[in-house]
Amino acid sequence: MYQPHRDQEYAGEAYYAGEYGGEPCYGDGSVYVNPPTRTRRRMIIAVASLMAVLLGGVAVDRIAAARAESRTAKAFQDGMGTADRPSVHVSGFPVLNQLAAGSLDHVDLTAHDIPAGGTTRPLPVTKLTVGMDGLKTSGSADEAHADGVTATAFLSHADASSALGVRVSQGDEPGRVDATARLPLVGDVTVSAAVSAASGNRIAFTDVRAEQGELLPPLKSLLDKALYEPIPLRNVPEGLRLRSVTTSEDGVDARFTGRSVTFHPDASSA
Image (cartoon, rainbow, N blue to C red; front, side):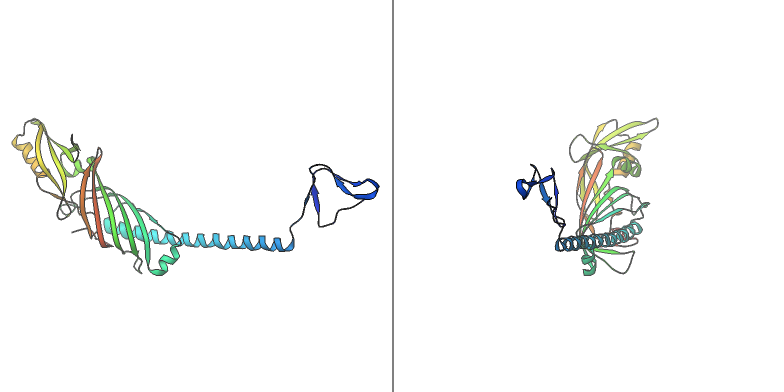
């Protein structure tokens, strides 16, 4: 009986010798399955080795990115005095090349609950999102510098109410908020005010008009103190400038831009 060569294997139905010792025949569906040649085995090993190197490079690059993210988060936390470190994401690949060049292409940062600080920082920031372009890396772990920055500071109505001493809520019209003052034995009074950006990174309440209740002197004094002077928003990184303010159901969004912004301890805007 004919025997297949050692370097050939087949799958399917068993083969049988042709009549009168002819060429071997195979049942329907029979196919040869050739084992990998030496060259193919070398190619497989080379590809596997290359994949291992690439995966190792990705892991090393990810470690470098994580370190850069940690340093940026620490610099921001030290500068803004947040209880928790912000979340930071470095974009682009490979990050090692960016670090070697001394500048990260783009970094996104999100921080929560940036506290108020007395008269210099009267309003807390509920959430701050920052996008940084050209973030410079340096030998100092507590400092970071960016060429360009865009940021949005969200101030919830609840946090604004606690800071201003009056209850702040969404107004009946876009760009307006309601402020309600309450005193025992006197009652409540609600006024509506337009919200806008003012110079010096301040939020201004203008076009104030009574909505409900009698504006008695004690309540008027309370509302005047809360609304009639623009309120500085200084618990944001130094170098950012307030561009616009919009209102929503839950709070106020203050949008900033800046060039050449440095994050370091006590770096709040003046």
